[in-house]
Image 1: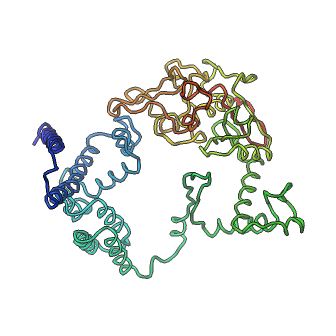
Image 2: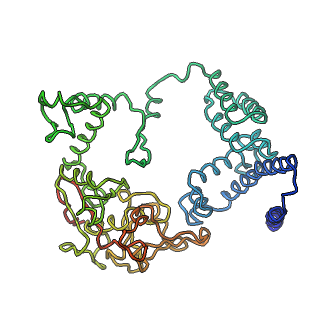
Image 3: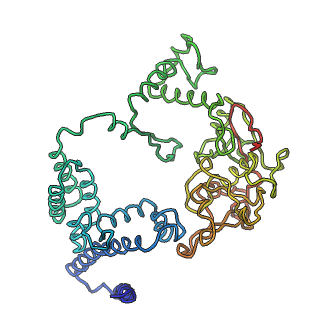
Length: 480
């Protein structure tokens, strides 16, 4: 069957759906409604099988780069406007449930053949598939292929009669019986499990962290906490917190913080000490420091928020308190003078002053949907590429993360500066489905226009954006 026939069948499926949507359902009885719903549920479980084989074949026909994306995950996310997590899930499913071929073109069974077969018959749901995938990935590598295959068959057989929760319980019990003692701890396993994860900022401004520290890492912080997390040390409630020597008895007696709170405050002192030491050098052409942008009105009224170069939202009172602990550079971008912001063709790399200005304006990568904050971006010639006689002028530049910056070029993405001084990203043909051209992810202020705006439209605060840079030394022009 050729490609045209496949498209005709898909068109027939869509036409059948339209016919179904046009039919009245008021005359159906309860049992009839349930019967129709059963058929639709089975069809919904079967349809992903077709996506699996189509995605598997697509990846043999072209590359993400040829379509104008960094990865297959981005291809799916951009074209169908789904999350990258959902795109990864679909690709991972296609990898284990879709058909495979050898290097010579001979057909191979899917990685999970029993699961793929059950999905093709519509007898298991996507939740069942996820549980089975997780369980098969958790089987110790010492288990032989024959036993692994039998475990998959048993899980699929169980899935056809129970819900995902009971299937998960059965899978965990099976894996436990395979390896009751668990893996023997060793240096390799400890090194593999090391890590520190930072969650998204919560509605109250707090950020949750979790992780596993190696014995070496904890030994280091154990010694630091013994000093700086002791009672009376680094207490933000003290007018003059003790960060060196021994705290006074009064400071110790008046310290009512818990151990967890003292360790939190000690981490602040550690980080501030490193930032002020100057040993971190430069990052993307600027001294490694905390950069915060806000509006002049918020700064003067001491109300509102500031946004860091890492996209953290900080209350203005915290911004002011942070500035009290460091030499604080305040660049007000309304009538700023003293730094060259237009370099024309004299220099390809943006100056520190230009980069600070762009951080204040863009906040992060300007490509729609990209969450990379300003700290992780490069300066991109947005109006016209440097190779095409682009100018290194602040109003022709924009921020872009490295991978997105490299996607701009012939037959790929293109950028331009619109009349509102926003960077617009135009997708290549394969990914252009009419999606947004501008990234507002890093501009939360656009969600809350000023109350005195008569037109009820977001005001253009670009001229009043403020970049506040906290470091031990003022940034010096980069001669490189």
